[in-house]
Amino acid sequence: MAELPTDDLAVLLVACGRGERSALKRIFDTEAGRLIALAERILRRRELAEEVVQEAFLRIWTSARQFDGTRGSARGWIYAIVRNRALNVLRDGRREDTVEEDRLEALREGEQMGHILSAWQALDRNSRLHECLAALDDRKRRGILLAYVGGYTHGEIAGRLKLPLGTTKSWIRRGLSALRECMA
Image (cartoon, rainbow, N blue to C red; front, side):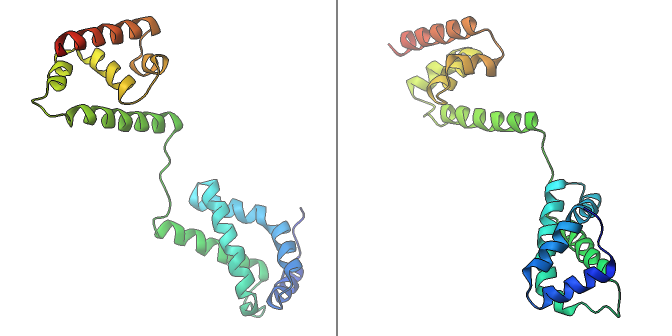
């Protein structure tokens, strides 16, 4: 949308000060895109920039009566609110570090695996089950724990262990057989 003349913005700010919502909507419709771009240049994150602009429009709405055209332009006043809000977000440490989706999945996977292995570690060290699980090779033990503690299907386990499905099924079957023999 075309940029409003500064005089029109000043009139719209005065109208906002009187509580006219349509004036705020008109300011938003004409300036929001440029304001988001400004905030995004500062924050380098689109979602934070959108949040900053939303907060800035709340501030514009509640503070419009404070606008004084003799002290500066309406556009400058609006842009200063967005700029200051974006800088405050940076200073406040609200800028979050992003994690790539595949890295996030790896973090979740590691956390889940840690939970599953901790269930095995939580077993009484003197128990027969702990002893028998410890006697299995690591992949068979992981496969059994993923299936029976984590509740994963054989296909999901194969994907997590990066093994063919048939191999995974065989290892789990052999591991269970070894467990039965050990427990007997």
